Length: 379
Ligand SMILES: *Cc1c(COP(=O)(O)O)cnc(C)c1O
Image (cartoon, rainbow, N blue to C red; front, side, top):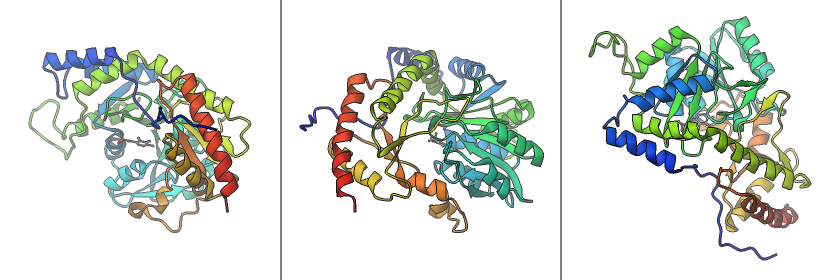
């Protein structure tokens, strides 16, 4: 097979149109470039509505959105927060910023998200909160987690950085936990370059987050700072981008969905690839096409495939490394076999709204070509 290298495929690319240009230029020309302005108000109102929640608070990124929730909930030194072992490091970092300990538990092979039974087993006298992560766009098992957290008086936080646009039993992410955080980094479903958001229906928590987001300044008395706060604000420029992305969100989501559906159709007969499982009642957010490579326990094929794809112009991403294996959160006692296996075998394929059907076909052809070679070469 001859492979034309004319076209290379990045793993992610934002979808930006003339609408984004128009809104950003409008914000720029208005002079409202900092953290006040009409686009910010508009974004927060519309995002809350879209997520079927009362309040949305825009933040500078998704990591500080997580920290803002935990800080506002008063989580601090001596406390424990349960997190899935398989997630982006930010989930655990936000816990560490509070001086609390992130306790890593395993994920479920059926959802790739935190296993409610593993959460139950990890709850102890110091546990204050659980952060569930909607990994690769798939909502966690919120009905089970909500019940568990209610029983034990724990705060349930959803890290929905990857799942904007997903639903569980027809309810959107953003409305499934006590507080939900989003990221609008350049590779997420919608983006403002850097940016984030928290949604909640808890008005006391929302007030506390508003205070902490703005350096702890008393809303009634300027330059009086009753508490230690942070500068976690988003700019009106970023919000202008997000308003355009929200206008186009249905289209962006539909196009990304199509990309993932095409991969799954085209690769359905590929015995060495297993697509992301989808639980009953779940509509995934189309963040990144995600597959497992090779049989359970394989530690070789995924990396060989990624290297070979890179050589033919297809960029991929390996799944996250389990947080319990990272130096800052190292926990040799964590027993997380499912997270470990997924981490070694998982791969994300190029996923973006502008990847058309012929593009997906080309990626699939290249993938089939190199998969045959690397699987024959396997030790
Ligand atoms: C992207 C992401 C975040 C936050 O990312 P920022 O780059 O800080 O916006 C948090 N958690 C998960 C699971 C993510 O994928």
